Picture 1 (cartoon, rainbow, N blue to C red):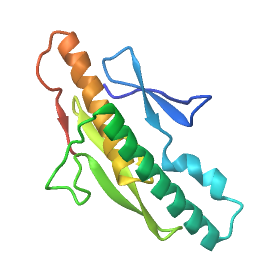
Picture 2 (cartoon, rainbow, N blue to C red):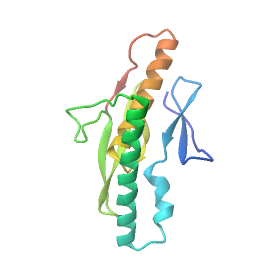
Picture 3 (cartoon, helix red, strand yellow):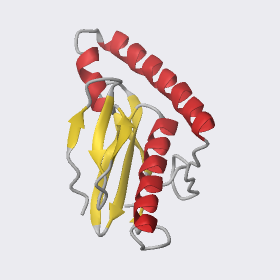
Length: 150
């Protein structure tokens, strides 16, 4: 099932997530929760400014990674964000938004994280989906894994 443990990696601001039925780990960008500590000492206005600047930088970086890696992002006309399994979540404290990635694998809800950038969240899902598909095909299952939008 989707009980992968999460550990913060020592370098690069990454979170290590064990994929379901896959002994290999896949690295995802650090989530929004990890930025909360960095914002704690700032005034609310400065927190908002810093969060938005970080989100803009995360968006640029994610777009560059998509281009460099040739990753296909999974779009959805049913999602407000335009991406499969990515939803927009309001951050009341900052008066802005973050993007959550959730999917259902083998009947269990799997939360891949909350990200400041829409493309960063879509990239996290694409990497998860592609790794799960590769593991399924390598295991002889053939075809795409049973991933659904919650």
